[in-house]
Image (tube, rainbow, N blue to C red; front, side):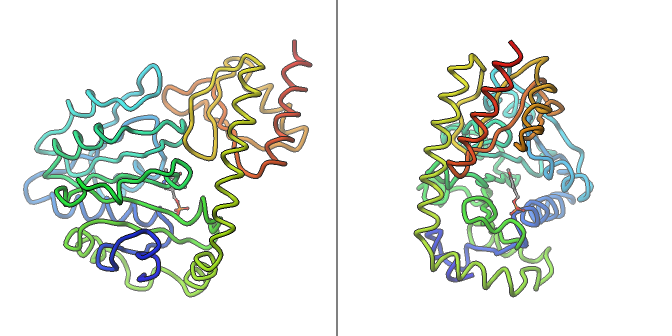
Length: 298
Ligand SMILES: *Cc1c(COP(=O)(O)O)cnc(C)c1O
């Protein structure tokens, strides 16, 4: 935990290592709803489109879920979120950059939500913040807002998805309350060994971030050339709109051995596919397949 904290630029008392960030999300849901219950704060606010685990964990913790519908441009719905924050709000889930859109939430927007929801916990899920190279962790406003908890994972930029390692970062009292709702030994010895190995190998991390930058440029360049609408992403994927052609694009890519994520069922994302921008040769293969599929179809 100490090494992880140092890597993230905080103290060990501000850090809670978790069994993947998914467990961190569950801890936030349990902690927020438990603390809020005497006063009747039972609502979890989820701006859509959102990562599935927020609703799953809030539901498991007994929350009433308040979904905030997507904006037409899939940007962060600031005013609608502010409008639904009330005395019954126990937790607000924010993701920056967002999954599945890649669109970041502006610092001022996080500030406004955190200030309006001072009586609730606000999770700033930074699963993809490594790729955006910005974080709430180092923000001076973090000191004044004990209700904000940052979520990080070592699954994405560090490549440890199957080993399960994530972290929550917040003020010591906030983190202590979240530690109390988790089992004491949820992070296993293999994950800890893998974290040490990952922190010993900063070259891999920097290399992968560079690959993502290059891949994202390659992919968005190709999508522009092909006339496909996409959302400007700060993450290691790009959400692209294929409309009615989405099913045939999915099938055509699959035939060529390229696996992408159908996001058609996410709110506001009908006809959308999320394409990973990871290792450059993989992205180049994906772009070549996409060109074949789209140009062959015309
Ligand atoms: C992947 C992801 C997580 C969970 O990460 P794990 O550490 O694998 O549990 C959390 N939030 C978002 C937005 C994600 O995309």
